[in-house]
Image 1 (spheres, rainbow, N blue to C red):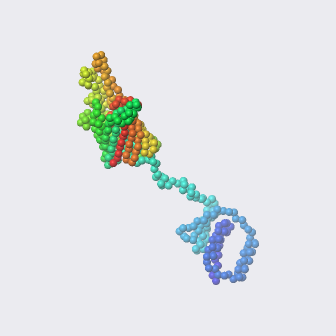
Image 2: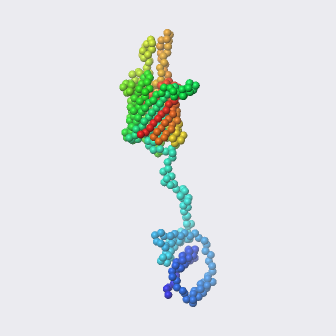
Image 3: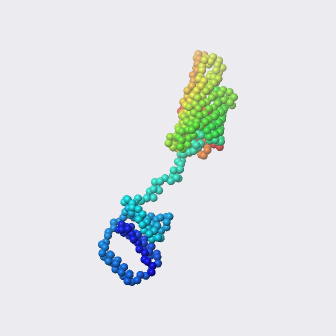
Length: 415
């Protein structure tokens, strides 16, 4: 007959709930084996002994304890049982029970996987972009606010077309402009330009305005820009410097030289502020905006003593406020100093002779609404000037006060 299998547990284990669990585990393991029939006398003796022990030993009340059961994934059939500071290793395949370690009595922490999963951000949440976020070169503003240029990035190898259109009839009074479709029936100035990214920092540009009046006519502007700081969802500031030369009569005479900085700053997700100071050298070169004696009849020799400043400077301020990720409200205003384009009017004396001159000039101001779709941007604008080159956008060539507006639009496209 095969020997029966017996387990000898530590006394501390027998007196705890671990002993009860181990007894159950061992019974299950024992039932899995082939068991021979025990002779009746032996069985009766065992029953008598068990009855005697049960009678002699008083019942022990075991306090409920927290039990932690862990299965060893590396060794099949091995179970670790922890309770009341003790840890027992049970190997059901080898029928071994041993005390592994004595732990400090402390509550077994439980892991709330549901709460942990809810609190821990997933990679998708970390990388999720706001609809107002953008990458370098995809700024939600255009190359111009209305008239003021911005620090919009020109990526390497891209062609960027800009197109501006300004009508001539002012909206006020509405009784007159209404009959002409708010001035859309009036004469318009359509200007066109292109920029090309030589590198991710350096770009060149060319722009032509057909506006023709005293002092400027069919102006071509050629410029070079450098983007020092690009703006994206991580950088709230952009900085670009720009230098250009303007020449009248298709770049053949009367040149003006411009040095400009373009600064953009982002406030929150929806607001962009712009500041574009510029110096305009020789903006009244060759006295081309000054009155001349032969402009009057009889000739007014007093015109030789009247001088306008030769150089000028401007300080463009602008703002773009995102209404939706694709629609923005625009506003800009440009104070000036030095030479200010406008009109020179004569002062008449006795016999209608010219005895002096007075000037009238107003800074440019504009507002509008912009819609962006992919690499295409369109803005409906209202401003008081038709001039759009760097040295001229700061003044109203129509001598309109800031509250007197003409309708127009800006268009840009990247290829």
